[in-house]
Amino acid sequence: MLAIIGGSGLDTLPELRDARGTPLDTPFGRSATLWRGRLAGTEVLFLARHDTGHRLPPHRINYRANIRALADAGACDVIAVAAVGGIAGHPPGSLAVPRQIVDYTSGRDATFFDGDGAAVTHVDFTEPYAPALRAALLAAGRAASVALVDGGVYAAVNGPRLETAAEIDRLERDGATMVGMTGMPEAALAREAGLAYAALTLSINHAAGRGESVAGISHDALLKVLGKGMRDVCAILEAVARQRGTTT
Image (tube, rainbow, N blue to C red):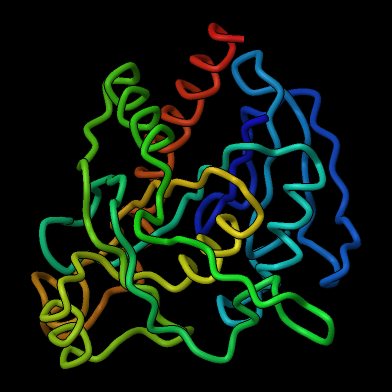
């Protein structure tokens, strides 16, 4: 089953029909509300990682509970929607399907294989995003007539504050092309849980020290881009679900 994780600007999925939702209790705590419904005629799961009302900052999200809840509910593929700042090649309003990720987070519960009695387990993470699911997103973009950037490197930082211009300089030297606060440990946990995972990112501003953000980031401008961009995101998600419906 297809699962969608909503980020900033996608706390709800209005196109989800016959939706019923509840938080789930897991061995790692309670998840955000998990919704089950139909999107473009296909049964899907939807979870807003920041939960109802966008109440959880990035460092307080229970990533383990969310991923475990999706797996327990029958998810096989997970599309994670995220708002990002564009460092290079991702101007405000652009959508991308990143190919790689660099983890700069700390202090987060980052693995299921932890605690007394847990087996020492190492998962391969060479390609953090599932190629087949990335291809499905790119095909959905073409079907929905929405332009998508194929590729990019997501830098995952702690937040909730935005970055300094010098920090963005460092991330760019490391090869990052976009920056966000929720990509990890979510992607790695999905890999540990055996779920195919891909990200769909919306650049809502130039990162600090870049473009229109050279002297600071405008919150009002950011919100305008977020609203318009999420309409394109929803069109892509519907196209993915529609493709699923024609192949099952």
